[in-house]
Length: 115
Image (cartoon, rainbow, N blue to C red; front, side, top):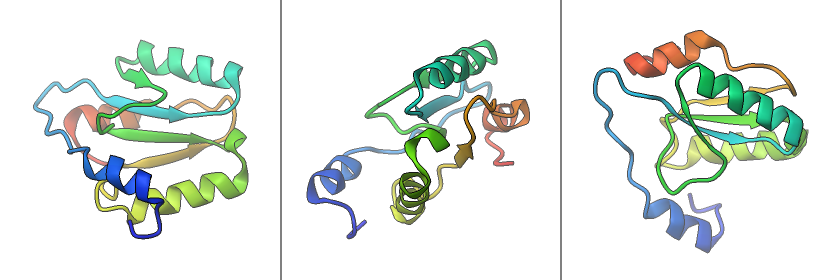
């Protein structure tokens, strides 16, 4: 977390992980710079029973990064998410434009099993 800007460290430090119970509705954070892809992915996730946000102060159960953010940004964002103590245990899924989140991933999140 020391490689993050001070403002980001403060914001991340204020977030606490959630502890869902059985039958939990997955909370998915989507980062996608392509509006059409973002809307399609959001509709797919909502239809599968997930709550979808583009930005949130609440810890998500899954973070989806889209390639439209740029190869370097996706790689750097994923790296920072894995080294940050707050998000290190949150699954990060990097997808190409228009690719859907596999339903088995959402099913695993409902059971709190990382697939």
